[in-house]
Image (cartoon, rainbow, N blue to C red; front, side, top):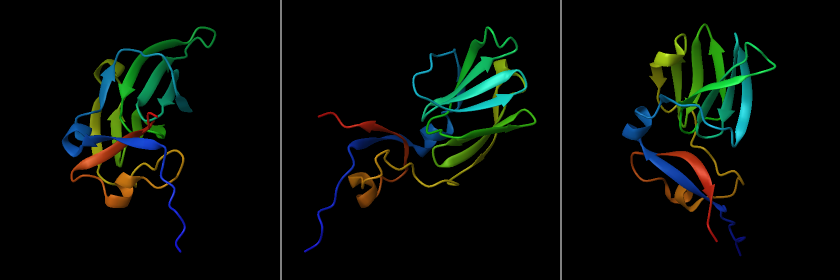
Amino acid sequence: MEPEEIYSSYSPVLMSRAQLEKSVSRKEPQPLSRPGKIYRYKNLLLINEQYKGVHVINNQDPTAPQNIAFLQVPGTIDLAVKQDILYVDNAVDLVAIDISDLDNIRLVKRIANVFPELPPPDHFTSELLKNGPPKDAVIVRWELKKQ
């Protein structure tokens, strides 16, 4: 008798490949709701908003940091910066974003399918992953299933 398989309590949020490739953009500052990693670069703090993007905080005066922008990057959980280029995961892709001019950020490179699909946060099997995601779909985050 095979053991019963336990399925994840999370449902994937999907985006088409075409949508993913157009998803990186600069937005107005947003409040932090699910912060992840923090990266300090020059006078900036770059704070990952798990699965959604990167908050850009001007920290020139550490006693009064200013939230100045949000970089929308669906599926992000990690980031690094070198010489004004922000490297961040865009779900399964690695993207390089020029942040030398924060008013005019630009995507300078995308390397597709570098990373595995994002796993469910509880690490149980997902029916979608077991059966395979729909063709041309990418998982950009997971949401708790509604009971």
